[in-house]
Image (cartoon, rainbow over all chains, first blue to last red; front, side, top):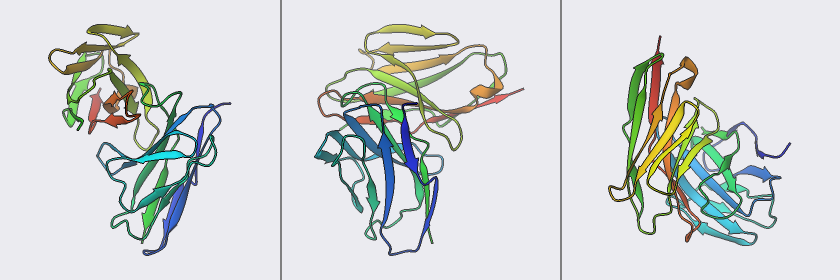
Length: 113
Length: 110
């Protein structure tokens, strides 16, 4: 079945450690996105990629980094510079950049202690 | 920049009709999307309006007025399973972004 896979579903890390969240899609979509969601809040755009080997900062990119070496994969690294990393992270993809319909993974809930 | 505004919460009873409004500010408008997210789950796409008017998909309808920078999602014959958060979103064809509103939590009561 085609879709987006995020792993792991739950992740715990100590403060000061970098952590990488995985996002893989087999939909052959060009565009991929990372969002952060805090309790009771909307989805805030962290980074997005329109094509392989290219990505742009979203609205809250500070303390995060990404790579897009393969069309299928768009990993997100939460660095120690991110002051409040505990959140629910969602990865999405769309056929082309900026398309109305995006497909989301099940999310990774990151807790930093 | 781009911004969207939605009410934070709406409550309705089973079988009723509810309307969730969304106003937006953006340059280069391409249309308004709606997504549903159950607690702890992944958002799922519901509808998209590129032109003014009403789009109907089963119990759900979405409306857009480009001149008023306004849209709404209409849910009819509410069911308990409709309890979820609903987000409006602006796709931006020229920048590649997809920006979401803060979301409206709908609680359906028996």
